[in-house]
Image (tube, rainbow, N blue to C red):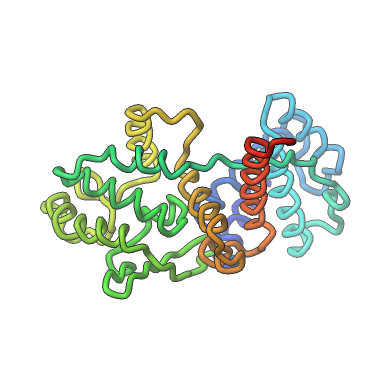
Amino acid sequence: MKKDIESFIHYLSVERGLSDNTLNSYNTDLLQYFEYLQEQGIKNWKDTDKFHIIGFLMKIQKSNFKVRTVCRKLAAIKTFYKFLLNEGVLDFNPADNLESPKLNKYLPNVLTLSEIEQLFNQPKLNTPLGKRDKAMFELLYATGMRVSELVSLNIEDINLKAGFVRCVGKGSKERIIPVSKVALKYLDEYLRFGRPKLVKHNKNEGAVFVNNRGKRLSRQGFWKLLRKYLDQCFIDKQVTPHTFRHSFATHLLENGANLRAVQEMLGHADISTTQIYTHLTKAKLKKEYLKFHPRA
C-alpha cells in the first residue's frame, strides 16, 4: 500500500509539477490515512470504503485539527483514490460523493500603513543582514510573493533596470511582477553593499537572499527573523509571513487596482481566491461607516 502512495507522489511531482511543500503535505496526509487503515487491519486499498475515510476524518477532528486541515486531508485522499482508479488498482472510488466540511469564512489579518512603517523600520541598515531584511520586507510587500517564492529567487530573476522580478509559484507557474521604486532602492542597496559581504566565502551561491553563512535563506530562517522584529514592535495582531501578501492585495484593491491584475500578480489560478480581499475592503468600509455616520 505504501508503494502506491510513493507512486502517487512521484506522479504529482513529475506529471503535475507540484511544489515540494505541496508534495510533503500530500505525503504526510496519506501516510496518516495509511496508518489509520493499518490500525483497522486493512492491508489492501481494495478493502477500503467510504466509512474508513469517514472514520479517519472523525479521528482527526477529535484530535482538534482545524476544519481547514480536515478538508485538506480529505482532498488528498480523494485525489489519491482517483489516481488509483486511473491506474487500474481499483475499479471503484470509495471517496466519490464525500463532501468536505464547510469552512468558516475568515478574513485574514492585514497590516495598516503605520504598522508596515513600524515593522519595516526595525532592520538596521548599517549591517549586511539589516540591509537584507529591509530588502526582503520591502520586496514581499511590493510584489505579494509567498515567502517560499522569495527565498527561491536567484540573481538572474531580478531585473533592477526594468523594475521586474521573475517568480516561480505553485505548480511551477512563472509570473513576472513589477517592483515598486522603494523596494528597488533597498534591493539595489542590499545587492551592492550587503550581499557581497555575506557571500564572500561562498561566491558561487546563486540565491538572492542568503544567511550569515552565505547560503540560501530558508523559510524557517525568515520566520525566525520576522518574529525577532515583531518582538521589537507594538503590533497587536497575529502577523505571519503571509500577512505581507494579504496586505499587498488589500492595499492595491483599496486604492482602485483591477481585481484581475491583482489575481495575476498573486498567481491565483481562480479569481474567487482573490475575491477574499474584496471582502476585506468592504469590511473596512463598513467599519468606517459605523464609526462616522451619525445614525449608524
